[in-house]
View 1 (spheres, rainbow, N blue to C red):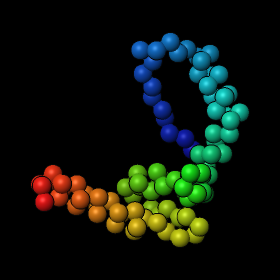
View 2 (view 1 turned 120 degrees about the vertical axis):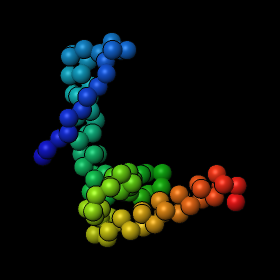
View 3 (view 1 turned 45 degrees about the horizontal axis):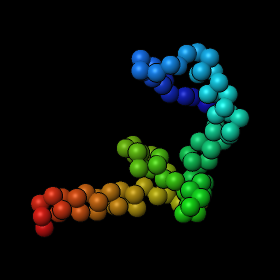
View 4 (view 1 turned 90 degrees about the vertical axis):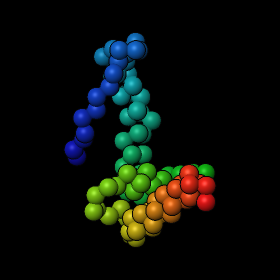
Length: 95
């Protein structure tokens, strides 16, 4: 598994290596790695709406597909984003 580099600005907070270690331990203890994987797998993690959280699809600017229950969702996501853009410009132009 490959992870991205995360850069944080601690200049405004009281965070030290011990704090980071404790936060990472808490995240693992609460199952955060499994929850992240469930989100990327398209599992139904949005409990209030009983559906997948499609944050990954909304931020997918590649040609790669995002599957939910074996079905690609990118065409629907892209279509919805276009409709949102049209609505936004209609409101801004007072139409």
